[in-house]
Image (cartoon, rainbow, N blue to C red):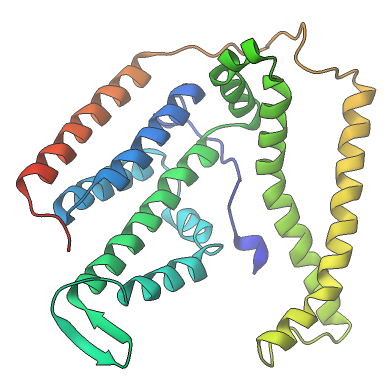
Amino acid sequence: MVRDITLGQFLPGHSFIHKMDARAKILLLMAIVVFIFVAGNYVSLLMMTIVSLLIVLMTRIKFRMYLKSMKVILFVIIFTGLINVFYGSGEVLWEWQFIRITWGGIHNAIFVIIRIITLVMVSSVLTFTTSPSDLTDAIERLLKPLKIFHVKVHEIAMMMTIALRFIPVLLEETDKIMNAQKARGADMESGGIIRRVKALMPVLIPLFVSSFRRANDLAMAMECRCYNGGNGRTRMKVLHFSWRDLAAAIFLLLTFAGVIVCNIFVPAVM
C-alpha cells in the first residue's frame, strides 16, 4: 500500500534524539553521511552501520517504520546492487562476451547496498524526530550567512520543509485515487511495464489537480494569516544547543577517528 510509506513523516516522542536541537541533528546527519562514504572497508562500514542502528534504537521508534521508509527506494537499491556486480576487478567468477562478474564487483555491490540502506535509515531519523516548525527554523538558522548575498533564506527553508512534509500527504492521496480507480474496474497490476505505465495515467492527472488545489489552499491560508516572509517574525520556540548535542558531537568525532584508523590499518575493498 502506498500509504504505508513513511517518508517525510514526523513521529512525536520523548527520546534522546527527539530532544536534541534540530540544527545539531542536521549537522550531525551531514557528518554521518560523509563518514559512511569515507568508510573504505568492511570494518569501518560495519562500525558506521552499528552507529546508525544505535541511533535508530535511541529514537524509540518501531523499526518497522524505518523498513517502510525503504519501500520508496527498494527498486533503486536492487538495481544499483545489480549494476555494481558487473563492475570490479579481481578473480573472474562468470563471464559471457563483454559481461563479467568478479569478486570485486560482488564486494562493490554489497558495499553500495549497505551504504544506501544506512543512509536511508539515518535520514529517516531526522524527519521522524523533528517537527516541521523546528526543521524550518533550523534550516533557516543554518542558511542565515547567505543573507549577506541577499538570499531569501526564510522562504527557501519554508519551501523545503513544506515540500518534505507534503510527501506523506501526496502518497496518501495517490493511494485513495488508485483505490477509486480500482473500484471502477481499472487494472493496474497485470500486464507488462508499458501497460502498467499507461494504467497510471488516470492516477497522475487527478493527483496533479489535487496537488495544485492543495497548494492553492495553503497559499490562501497563509495570506489570510498575513504571512509576509521572515521579516520581523519572532519565534515561539527558540532553538538552543544543550549537553545532548555536545555528547552526540563527541561520540561522532570518536566514531570518525575509528573510521580513519580502520581505513589506515585495514585493506580497502577491491
